[in-house]
Image (tube, rainbow, N blue to C red):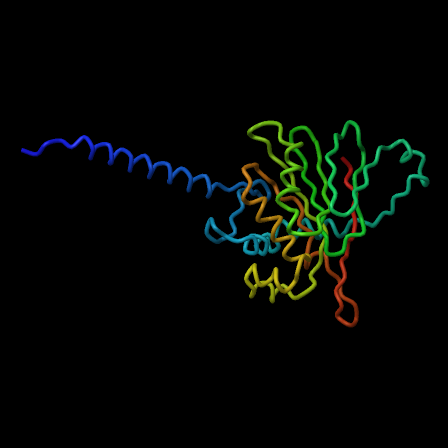
Length: 243
């Protein structure tokens, strides 16, 4: 007669618990937190997709391409408080390079930045209360800390959802070259410039627990013009958000 081994039961239970925990962790990792046009966004790759993969698919998404074209069609406007008495009563916040500001729409009317070339402007708005955070990012090294600081003043509950706009940077090199490079190769070749910066931003958003609705991604090729010699320049180097 076989005797019941209590140690074996314990080991089986422990193994089952470990498998369940690992499954839960894997499920958490594969949960999609980026949305486009209200639908969960999938980069057509595995859940371990690198930031480069996610970025390239976002740049080609028809909804976001249309949004970039609409953004580029907005007539340029130069703001000066002295030009309009109405603007004098407005409350403004200006952001310098490597700064961010989180504003309450009841207190601040406009927040903006300029003088960005390879830098990227990031706008995150709480969909529930309208609180908005705007950052002028210039390096992948500051993205994780910067996003954490921005979100710390925006999250107001477990189910907080955000609208996200990325504007700035430009295509310093051919995007086809970027597609052929690994993320580390791109970082080494391009330095702390537009492509690795945009890559780091979308990778960090992808890894967060909050829900992000990408509304505008006017960066890289969408924000590039070339002169007769083929030299690339950004279309936009600044913007203003009406909070």
